[in-house]
Length: 437
Image 1 (cartoon, one colour):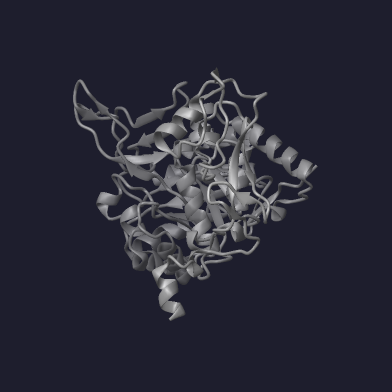
Image 2: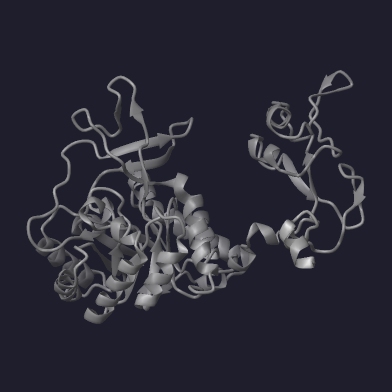
């Protein structure tokens, strides 16, 4: 069987699946049950400084986006960091780590952006035996209005400063959790690295409003007739998260910086994709909140079976394997030509491919042939966009077939060139013309 044991910045766990800092990791009761179900580690729900605990609302905390079958696609939450006393959390963390020494236990922390605040809490967390800390620079609501969370994560100079404090005042590995609510994710990642962080984790939630009640005209979730922006998570954010992970993994300034991938991970395949793009492990939240802790068992079995089938002996065989294949648009091969092909035996003649192509694309799929309902690709019009593949309800019915070098592209009437060529050298590129002159 493939070996899925994980070591992330020196923190060992029996598998790469950790629960992210969130309601599922708010107390010992939850964490103990999660470990019994098979989770390799947890990031404890974010701790605040000593004193009166944070106050959460006493009403709806979640808004949702559903698919047509009411499958949960995304959650918006307005919950804040832990509203339990710091000492209670610390005692429970210490006991859980003693009970489960083979599992990863990382403390998420968010305190004011002042050196003394960080200096005060770090030894308290260290005394619990926690394996590391995660700096919560991502929360986009509630705490950000108080100068914490994403208010720090959006300012690279603040990130570097706080990371330096933490590296100075603790022996524990430091993981810096980044906010996606920023233009260029590479800048905060570079700042965290400059401060000495051991790793970054991303993404935290995306600032959002998921809906409006059209009777009360209040955003959802609604508290006494009012609503607020919150943090969006779940399967819908996965593409955004993977792009940001890949950007950090392939950036020359942060290449090699360990990454804990977060954002919409629901299946083993999601986890494998994140790791292929450079994540050293993954963190999960919404899937556990939707399906329960035992979903990790499917993730573990699926990852092991896939790795075994593909001949991947350990996680190191897949981590970062896709990163070199991520590039900028300008370097894509403009001489690559592909055409859609419809398997007539698999086609159910629903017509969705034709409608999509006819109304919104390139009018490259027939609807009638010789007076009969028939859907076939018109190679002379097909640009290879693969919209039809994505709207077809039958998996594998429509495929993209590359044209061999030397064959004639019926759309252009020209032979397919075997030579790689991209936008940087294309004659229509004004910058290429300037360079040539």
